[in-house]
Amino acid sequence: MNFYSTKSPDTKYSLKQAVLLGLPKDNGLFMPERIPVLPDSFFEDIEALNFREITFTVCQALLGENLDPESLKGMVQDVFDFEVPAKKVTERTYCLELFHGPTLAFKDFGARFMARLIGHILDEHDVRPCILVATSGDTGSAVAQGFYQVPGIDVVILYPSGKVSEIQEKQLTTIGGNVTALEITGTFDDCQKLVKTAFLDQDLKQHLNLTSANSINIARLVPQSFYYFQAYAKLKHLNRPIICSVPSGNFGNLMGGLLAKRMGLPIDHFIAANNDNRVFYDYLKSAKYHAKPSVETISNAMDVGNPSNFVRVMDLFHQDHHSVCKEITGYTFNDDETRTEIAKVYSDTGYILDPHGAVGHLGLKQYLSKNPESIGVFLGTAHPAKFLDVVQPLISEPVIIPDQLKAVLSKQKKATMLAASFKEFKEYLLSK
Figure (cartoon, rainbow, N blue to C red):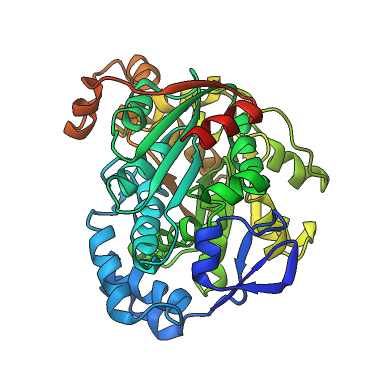
């Protein structure tokens, strides 16, 4: 399997090139040259498989030409050593809980898989890579944990000052070792722009072997398709059309779902659930895409005004707005609606939503109200304990903090403050 750039489809790259470059030289994004379709027999028996067995089958279809079966199986066994349950919330809605990994966020799937993959494809002659990653919340901690003490790899994480929760900040600024945290005085979009600009800078290219661990990297994107198969396996027995609602920020998660559907997964429809950062919602309504400055919300990981993976979505649908709208419905919800949903769901069911899951649940409810034959699953992207200041006042109950989060709260934050200036950022990287 080779990969192409969304800006120059005729130019092909190997898996190793795509993963280690992060971005193609033309500043597009990598896509697989073809998307394999899994056999009907796989879906007929999928409910009898566990998550690792499902993942190995999907992984082998996508990457089996690049990696031998034993290596793939070893990666899957090591990386996905935690549960992926689908919890019933209401009669027709289920939460696919993606927060049972080491950092309690869905980013553990992509970051851990990518770390293992890079460790596998590097050889002794390769230059030590420096991984740059921008985070709006959970990516940073997952990447830090996934790459911590991986031999031959340095990690630099950029996050927006004052715009991540206290626990999220502690998770990404206390790990140390080969991981450096940069606190940027700006927004996530500023952080993402600094990372993208760095990949195009010739001085940095000459002195540093840069790659990215954001979902702009194909090695981060591919694992985000795996858990949609798990959702189907858990709900298949209900014999009803399945809707997937995705809390959407940089659109890597939604792109992972679309990839899974192209592989044959019988998902009926997708929902892109947005907060007040609604550029994709506006695109669905108008057929025109306009990036905007991000707006700060309580669902901070979705505070993205120019989602990178939009270009992949467009590439997948051949730039056809009508085709996009047939497969994806968009909704947008503000902070007041999100808070109300967290309180209501807890009062009605006892289930605790985090702010991102609440946006996903709102979108799912709205769609299901007009489609009574369907059931739906929304992605629970992070543990509610990561958002104590938002969630606890709404449910009037203490949220149990898992031990791995308690441990980081007592640690000392270590981060370097930088302005959202590429000149300053570049000087910092070269000084390292």
